[in-house]
Length: 128
Image (cartoon, rainbow, N blue to C red; front, side, top):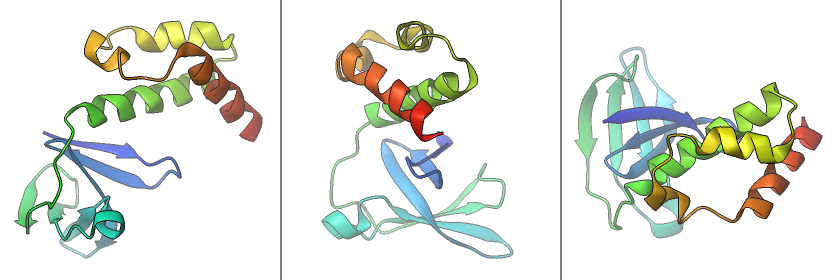
């Protein structure tokens, strides 16, 4: 399943089968993505998608590291939490309560503790 998200710096991020890809470049026919850890782990895996990111056209090379199926859920949780924090100016605890709805217990177990997450909410609001 292909999901489009954003990195912490706001650039597009493609999530597929537990692996994350960052935008490499676009052509008139397709979008080329490279593995998120390409520099860190020298991974040469790449992915080509259609312009609407609905169809994977080509997978190039294999990853030299294991994927993490939970990373997609964690990234979506952080993205939802940041959106909620910037849109609604309710207190950070209530932001977390709203964002925790629908999050599986196995994902909650690996998230940082609430005080760290509340600090993230306050920091995002301050940086806005």
